[in-house]
Length: 376
Image 1 (cartoon, rainbow, N blue to C red):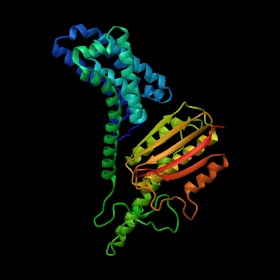
Image 2 (cartoon, rainbow, N blue to C red; image 1 turned 45 degrees about the vertical axis):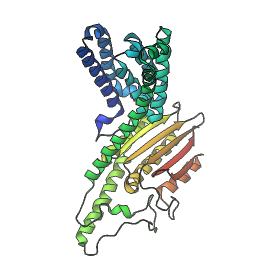
Image 3 (cartoon, rainbow, N blue to C red; image 1 turned 180 degrees about the vertical axis):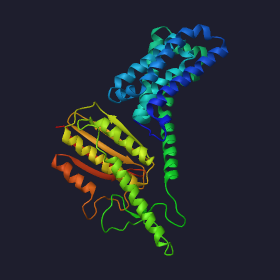
Image 4 (spheres, rainbow, N blue to C red; image 1 turned 135 degrees about the vertical axis):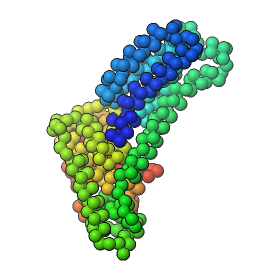
């Protein structure tokens, strides 16, 4: 579930029912000011009751939608039906109908929102044409700009909303992270910043920050080091807290992991699922969860990132886990460094079970850790 405890009002399910209620109330006010409230009152009552159901079951509905695309398709059909019975091209419920595009965009980024917007526009045009309200009628009455606006509006809304939400989440997460970061006069904000990505023994980073001033009191330096080490150990204990059940499914396990990570660090973290959900064997599931734990620990220690995305992609014979951050990247372009460290150990471990681990810099900054495992 996207969002974290520091911004609960920006989680996917809250945005879903929040927009639905906001657009419903705006529609009711508009109809009241226009003197048409009585004529649309039955439809307002029906849609309001459905809003109550959405609010009550928004969180489980969001989880189901991650695995079953047809659920969001039904919501789009519902929105098209609302337009058909409320005035067609000139329906006052148009922005309420756009609520069916919110979840596809939040779950699958702007691409999901654009695809849902295209489906919405096509289904609306086809349905209204079927009842005798063809696009030509709209052009005749209001001109081509009106038709272009009606057809392009859902696509623009579906594509822009997730981008704006993500920018807002990222900005709030970075501000929260800066607020929590301890500061001491004349000292670096984070003594651990000198460590390279995916730490190794005996390696000096090529982009090291200035060291502590020579005249800094030794007691203050020691206190700073102890505080940093304690923070890392606290995060390690949080991340590696055992799951509630050994049989916990893969996706819920990752949801719980990013929730713990977000609560402790303030970094925005989310899980995205692609493809039809399949059963992952217990030992492969355990290895992938462990990789996610180690990667998130590295994100906090070395990446200085504002957000992290865990993507699970299923196909017919394998499952892939990608952990992506928007941090500083690999300081020397590779994670292969002398000495045994967590990612190298995970690379060997995954290979024992037919898996593969790749670590590379993402275009535009940050690091991607990608693991691929067979389903059997």
